[in-house]
Length: 263
Length: 268
Image (cartoon, rainbow over all chains, first blue to last red; front, top):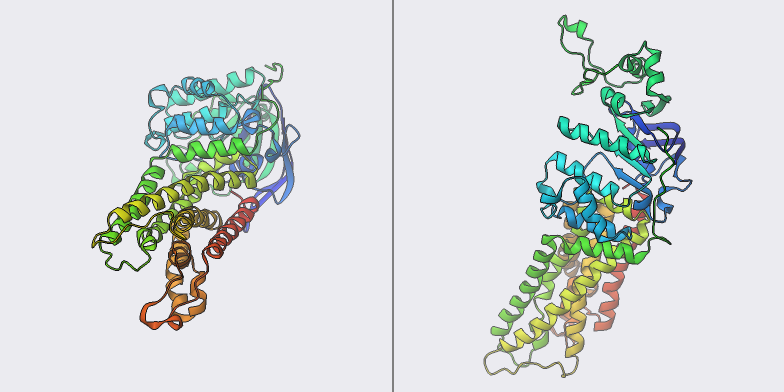
């Protein structure tokens, strides 16, 4: 459904995405795994046509995004940052998008119920907590009932219940035969959610494989396998715990805790 | 695991300008700040017209021009609202949702300009007509209120009403070029207000081409402006009303074209 070929994007002196090629297929959750700054969000923006590649192409159903006939009914996207005006109510936000997508008002009510925002749909979205804002973003992504869904770091900042809800949602969307592409830097979350994995580091493809196969490479530990791949490409690394001569928890990057991966 | 690929039920055909325009209309009307700004702009313009009316002592002056005196200060808010209509997309992140729904950027900007322009045109015409009648009613000292049937009056009222729309569209175009609210507002105020004073000072002949002087001395007048005791030599060359309107349209078109060109080419 989505095909990237030689995708390259440079911001000034930084090469954010470097000759990235991959394909996404329907019916499975494809995880997009890589450390922070590895080019995941940039790739998502390139798919959505928000940024233009310096080289290469990316298509959705053989079309670049800007040529889609009814974009919201073909691709739903939750990008990393908020994508709504804080002064507008959740309902008005969705109604505006529905108008552009030729989508009926009743569907707006449906997605509001689906993500559980009924009680706050009339409130200004600027008052929403992070979890509610994510739900609004997911409602917008589901509005057109699209066959392709992109989620950029959907569980960032969510409580365990929210994380679980999103995981179930993504799996059920894939089970309906949709193409689901979800980026994360959380290995444990990917282990629970994804079937296939595209691993990138410094904008380059490191692996395009299944979760099971990747874990098998390092004797069953997905985390170990990931570090094996990402080791050379991670831009910033914290010191190994041994350097502090204490049993401090291992953090592969500042602020990120891989957690106890189910391996 | 592998179910049949999901068949999305997209409507027939493809999205068009009207879908984008409908989205922009819902976006504009669902922000409380849009209505507040419009209400303050129109009320302020009328209040100034009434104040000038109350204090008018010269029955031989251009009474219509006096009643429309609030339009020039109102341009500032109209232009800022135009800037915010565009920069608000970037500061809030809304632009990502907007472009996901309408990825054809020229079509999106055209829809935005059409909807915003129509709303500002309505607001401007309401402001001029209400100012005209309220300013006339406020006249004292035995001065008779002007009527729309007098030569040039209806033209002055209608043409002045377009100024909110046209300066607002200049703001919208600037917002698309600059994308940062504060910087775009600074350029707008600098270009529309400060430059007019400056150019009036150093290049007298060009002053008549400045937006605020076009609105104040070309669009809203019923008779050619005289500059008091200094005579014709002290007066810059003011454009005739329709030429003034054409000049304002040109400013708006240039700002929108520049904004549209950059909007289509740059990363969002």
